[in-house]
Image (cartoon, rainbow, N blue to C red; front, top):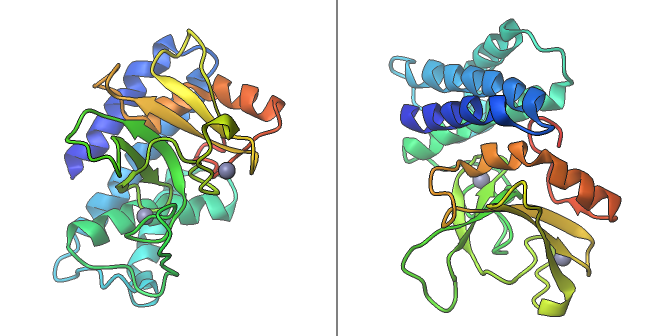
Length: 230
Ligand SMILES: [Zn+2]
Ligand SMILES: [Zn+2]
């Protein structure tokens, strides 16, 4: 799983120099991903400790990890730190086969089946498809795992009528689009890995931050802001 963090970091470093309007965000995010990788490695390296998945029990370890993040020295608000530390923690929970305890799980397909979090970004990829799932997946904003989701459905309210679902994309970002819903006025970004297989959806959606401006100007609210606040 260290590879997973490295892949995100490399992608951010690769995109930053050529970014159009999101260079500083990507540089910041690359640093943040490095700190998150450190948190993950710290947790993974704790001898004789495995996460229980119960945050209350595991909190002492996370407080050490949070200090690690503070040490890295960003002055953003505390919510930011919680989320930034929880992502690598929950990834390690998932990798060790534990389950999160005490998080309100939802039966709804619109929430992460592992931790109950909201989707951060959606992506399309080529895989064995069924009529049910299509080939679209959502990535969880809280634990960064992904789950299959139907293709033409609002990831916020479940709207299915095609006339209510709009897509916007700009030539600058060939493989990223806004997926907006006229019913609930929310949107999520979608990354098309069939056009750019090397993309890392959570990084590429930050690279495409100018699309968020367009969405906001048109009255749409993002389902969940990412770690750089876009
Ligand atoms: Zn999750
Ligand atoms: Zn909707």
